Length: 362
Ligand code: IPM
Ligand code: MG
View 1: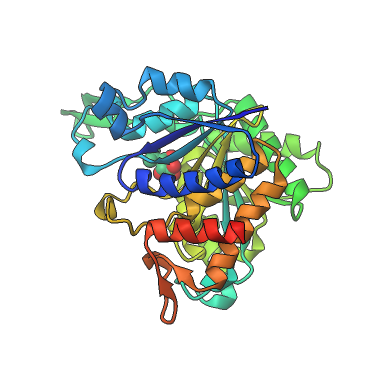
View 2 (view 1 turned 60 degrees about the horizontal axis):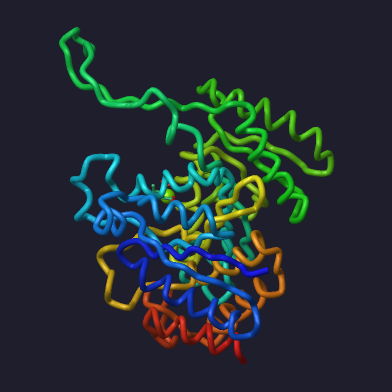
């Protein structure tokens, strides 16, 4: 069956990095995989072309595809737009519309990059964590939300901003199951991260995770408050196998975990629905400061294609082919500027894409 892939480059470095990932898909296609790609605008690009960060045509395209490849969204030129028109809203809406509640963010250290991490090599070498972040709930989507005028501490009217942290038990249950399933295929250890000492929302989260744990007697479950988890992640990250957490905590912890691996430019992600339909994107942003300069690191996006092969298409061989090619390129000392160290060969974004393509064909 033809694999239908929606390609949404987005803003900033999005188009350059996505172009490299498309080269990788073209290799698979040339080797016989039936792939059909179609492009759509999202984020600032959606606003510029259709006045909407998630144009109806893009949503339609995404809905009718098996998988979505996304670059990044956002840029300073859009920061003054009304909230619903901002690029980030396009990203949040597509996640919600496609019901992509399980966000898989692996933090993996490639041995060649041990020196690029700001942590000591012995702390990060061999690091292999999978963060499962809930992606369609929490304070990101909870109602009520807003900014309004209310009586302040001194009784005088002033503006207050508010959001609602909210999880239903079914939302927790379904993401917990995804995390337990992944733990079963890995080291069988799952750490659930919340703030149950303060938040009712987290208290419920913990209770539901404990209920789901009964279905997975082989998995060793632990619970950690998010502040402690942030500390443990830099103190001794290798204690973690799989982490499951809510939307906002996962947003923060996954950026932190990315740095353990040397560069945020290395980490892919998968956002999945109940049926493994998925959207695949690097975890980094649109990096407007280097956009259009052909120097961004496309590896996170290329590795997102590997995740697409693995999770949506169940094609482990193609996933490994891409991952092996990336490892070979790193072993050769080929580096974009963000991961470059003395003695390595510095390449551009497109140079890196070409190197991965060459390694796939080798
Ligand atoms: C991420 C990003 C997004 C998020 C932003 C761009 C809305 O930081 O994917 O981690 O907060 O989820
Ligand atoms: Mg983030």
